[in-house]
Image 1: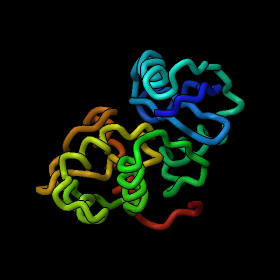
Image 2: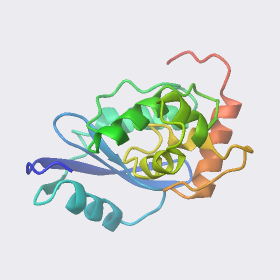
Image 3: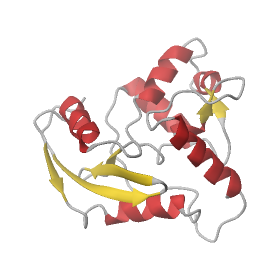
Image 4: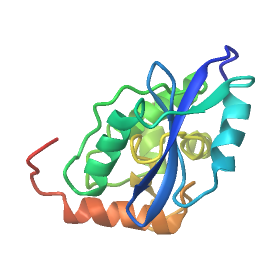
Length: 178
């Protein structure tokens, strides 16, 4: 948790099959909300991770982030280039970086992530870190499934996870833009 008070800018992104709130600091994207959740999801996250910080609606400051997420949802983007500002523990950062290395259109298991970060017995801790990922879609935790291939928990809900995996399955061929 960061203790510095910062200005956090937010906007409502309309896309896929609904809307989501996204937020950024001056450093980068810091939050991508769950599909069709209320503004309270964002405010509660800010209270926990940036106590005392203010939230300011600013569609223009978030345009770059909105554009990248919409391009992804439209099948025009496989990777994200926007700056991010992840707020978490050192262990969470290691797990989130491993998530960012999962190729578009592919899935991996929690135990595979634990092995990748050289913590093979930390599967539950890996799961908790994945569950704490504040950047849905852009840090692709939706690409993590159970060892048997079944879909497991996702902050955005299993329906959103299914939609994202299907989008990537359909778009796993070459795109004009990355």
